[in-house]
Length: 382
Image (cartoon, one colour):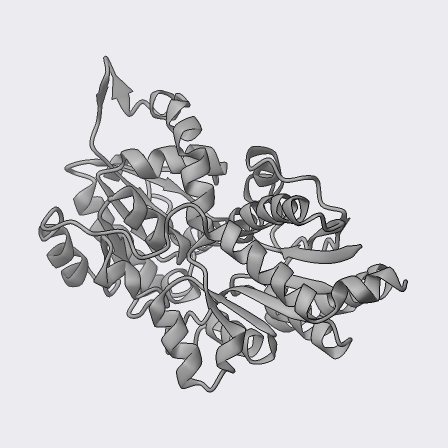
């Protein structure tokens, strides 16, 4: 029996874990390998629309373990995850731990596993913004430095790892598992009456709208920056509705800084609660424009062919710029206005191996590694 523990901690993790678990089950069946998969939800995000609903919509089994760590400072949260996840590893004795993305759960669980001598596979390895002021960048660097398998989404990530001296045999170009989830659920998502619910479609016609997400500390933790973004959006809101599913952090800052009137329907900005994956996918696919500071949305908008303005000075996903529909924009009025003026010029392409089959390639790499390193033999003796 091979035992693999998968870790999910934050909203984007769930879209990456789902195709890996499904593909592993299928690959193990084809090989005649007895496989047990254990899903650990660290509880880093605990809002229903940002966690539980994902398990329902993506067809994931309910987590076998929920660490319920909740929010806190980076140190507090990472420490709680490590303390609680270590107990899981000692009790379950897995042959491998699979971590995804770049959140605190990713690095915390990778550290626990390596200190206990358990191999670690990092899905979405090698992404670099080259900005060490971002907590996510530190998580990426630390996780990749201790992982046994580095599963990359694109050639930029592969080049980053080689430049940093990662063993070539540890690097595997598998494609983007999040795109697997998008392609699998797109048709269902588009069948939902989401536009009608928001009053964006009437008599078969869709009203032009922009979709926005905003949560990075650099954008929301400074009043002057957040206010300037809001003022720029208010100008855009004269021409089209801006739908804004507000992250809890951002919603709190808007209230704290007294900016509720700016981010309001009076300025064409319609705030709502965070949405389920399928509902949000529907809104992305039908949007005329996406504004975001999220990493994953840069990738999804590229596949959907929707123009995306990323309100950041850098990105760990440069392939979405060189081959996709994404543009980096500083979060100030002049830069955003100039970028908006250029929307619609040119179209992007799909990066290599973003084809809906990345999960299958991940599964084969994991099982090949475990086979070569004697996981089945060890399991047979336990």
